[in-house]
Length: 226
Image 1: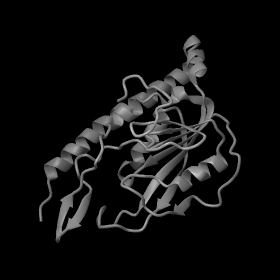
Image 2: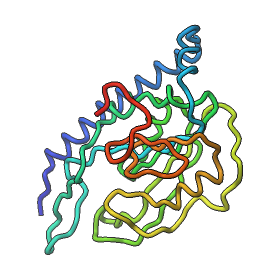
Image 3: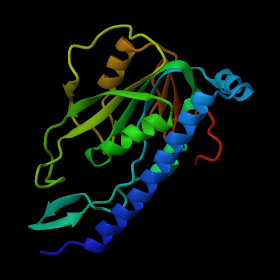
């Protein structure tokens, strides 16, 4: 049984290049933080307004390297939405939209769990702990161990305190539509992190939240983003 090894190599080569670019963004922003940016720093803070941001970026699974067993054959599975490269995700101005003291919850998949740490740092946040959404198994994607979890990287910048404590770091919720995330998670976010709230790549409106994404009202404008 053969798989497209060249396609997999091309993906890994591209991901490696993006990871280097993301690491460069992290390094640059660390240098800027150490040196201080004077008027530029003040300008950034004058634009910041969200103390809690939830982001569900469209990680690049467009190559179909996730596999599903179909009629006894492993087939690549593509995603029904536009994806962004790791470098494009790192370049999003999330740092500019967050308060100096803020919380970030970054959704990611097993394939991009490592990269999510770099993205969080590129956005100016320190990763704290991965949270886990446990789902009922569906199909055979992710062999040899069927994928049945998604991760949320909880992050912080500054000294913003949590308003409450959750009694666990994993939850079991039912699946929704493809890539849709459980509303129950935002209930938990509202319990433990203070507003104002922003959800990036939102697919619907939620009372008390600003949203950005092509499936919801865009309360914020991101220059150069589609």
